[in-house]
Image: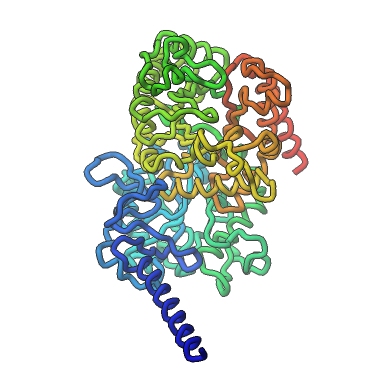
Length: 635
């Protein structure tokens, strides 16, 4: 028996070692595996798709593509792909040693005040990627008044963390600077231009993983960071490793450069983390978020056909619901009696569908806008609990004619005279990537995805590939409409719905950006009414601020400050509280809930009856402005 025990023990040990070896080979050397990409020594190893694999079912990067980049897809000129193929990655990648030295990294500042500034930013990403300089993390967009030379147009500013694959360039800040100057020249910058004057693109090195560097032409850290809010604000958006964790090394005991205001203490952390940590502290010391929206510093995002830069956090936008369906839970679908009947003889919902009445739709949309809606949200299928899913072909057949008709409607003088920030916008409510892509080509300005990319593996790549940088609304949901209200999907750890929603939404945000979508295009929706109980909906509505805070602590960067959409209109939890069983009788309750949502931080409210809520939205906005004024006065 003793010999048998020893033999079995040895056999077990051998099997365990074999299992570990097999597991390692699946990660590193297996032909069907993911390879491991080192970003920097303080980040987790990041798996990228092996070139031999197909795209992941979760909407991740395409075969052979690396995370977060915007180089055009091979053979598709002028279109930004979900991720860029890394030329350095080939069949030998699967044999790469997991312990190889990480690629050099740097933090760059971007600024532009000439031409199509958003377009120039996106082109700069493409040119950086073409040189093997890959964007790992990106800050939000800020429109700022010019500094030093004030007689010039306003700037668009941001910052990004990059990983440099060519170590010969990456290890030498001077060589990296030379590459950046070449990119500036390609983007139209003239070398003889005035110092601090207008430029189509300005690329500066703020921090470098090699640490401090000083020559006649380059100084790192950049010597004027401490006096530039237009640099500090974007830097505060970036998250690398644990640089902003309370009590992280160096926060309390940092030595600060007298010129730049940036820590030189890198004994316990690398230069990038030390620089970002100190920059973030400097930003707080100068007032932090209280400076955004004043002092010539606005957080902005591109919106509409002309990519008009719109301030984040301005007046609340009303999104009007336009259901091109017969089976909306609220009974307002425009297919109505002439549409399909999913209960008739148990046939498919597509078998009895009739063409939409575009005249009726245009009239309804026009009335919505005149009543106060800024966005019209077109939906081709119901996502109510238990709804039957339509195919993407059927959804396209319903949605595209409507989008084209609304695009033509809103080009009329009666709508265009309102000015850039007030021209009506078209949103499309879909969880299909192909529908989203085609809708944008047809004239849609926003994509509203109730699934946050979980119901279609192509959604993120489709969004990343649109020619226009349209916003993508990422909503929290579990399951799909047929399963989302199950006991499993409505149960939340510790009973803390806002916390768990924030964490799960943060994970979807990460998946979105890793697939190539610029983070400043992402809007948030906590998903009230989707995979939540009535009590869960109330918990969420009353604690929207905690969702944002959770996004911040989970490393969502600038997306934590993104516009938040809240959709409470006519939903069941309002009926349960008021006793109104008929959805159309819940409009007054909807108005009250919208006011609560705005007080909690909502930037857009999605409703069925615009007239019923417009006054409540205006009152809530005034209260929010008054609170902001009082807060600024106290500070």
